Image 1 (cartoon, one colour):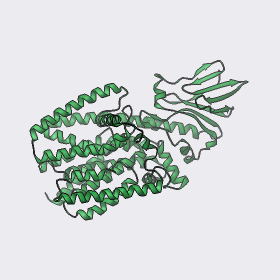
Image 2: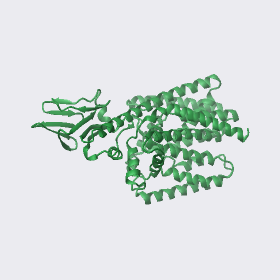
Image 3: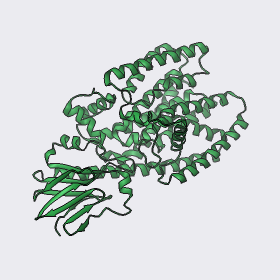
Length: 501
């Protein structure tokens, strides 16, 4: 096949992925900024800085600033960039799968196409697409994919090595998800490099570069992992880490579930199924080149899962799914491999259809959750912005909604970006997930004589026709006058509280 025909085929694949990607995610273009998004925008536009002590990820601020230059504070263009990055990453998964030879030419193309498609519709990493700050993980993954494709080049490796180093360091200024990439390069190129000594030298070179990056990062930010490090260095024993790895790998194939015991049972069934699949695979493949390369894919997946498993990912909500963005590359390659090795003809396309339905169902459920979070943020800020002469007190601003972030961070930053007088806006408390799960129905203010209690920690008292509102957990209290409006979130919407008896 000529280079021109290959280029034309690749262009068709890329455009197809763009069309499918926009069909899947066009609905999020109406979403607003959420949580940490406001912190980045505040740093760039008001504080005018991107380097600061603490966690070192300046890439998000830089990318937001370029978005701002293009379209100001119109969030649609920011979401557009997220979708474009994801579609491009899906195309690069296709390109990587083309380079990692497992099948004859025709099957290899369809294997690569299926892998890229599965990655495009994969539902358990879409925090990287539907949350603007989540683009850090998709950018890092895209850079990692580019490096892997270059590493599988059979010619001009030195030229690609220098370019790869630059891209690697660029990606690490955004997200650390590909910091173990040197090990994955070593694994995936193991059979392609003629000399094992050459392969080891290449790995040592990558390791030295990674160490230099870590040292520079420590000098700039004074710390390596910020508060996130506590999730790794928390004194857990080996058993705890094994359990975290078990749970995290389960989330690769399963949606979050509140019922953890059900999730464990389902995951055990899946593990038994995976063992059965490998029994049939090994029986069919025996000792062939495909077997060896398939094992290399398994090793690459395990390496890519080391970081997510160390941090741990929620099994009850979609929070943290962005950590699965890079590992899902190798998962989708393995799934496509199973489909091509175990099914042929019509059964193969039936399996593809079933997997696609499973992925698309949970993808749309996740998108709806983030849309609800966006609507909640929009309503809160609309009320804060309205009637600028009035004081407003907000009760129960949700931190997140089943993993979709609302205002865990960034509320005051959002007010300042919208030029809202922060002296007149107060959030008396933020509501976390465990608190709102305690209430089966909507949160309804409880009135008793001269008191109003709003679950879980807000108490209003009336004395001599004057009202005081207090957070009974931290003791913070405020006097309420006639120029004050009080709003509370009841799990479904924002409501204004009437103090009339």
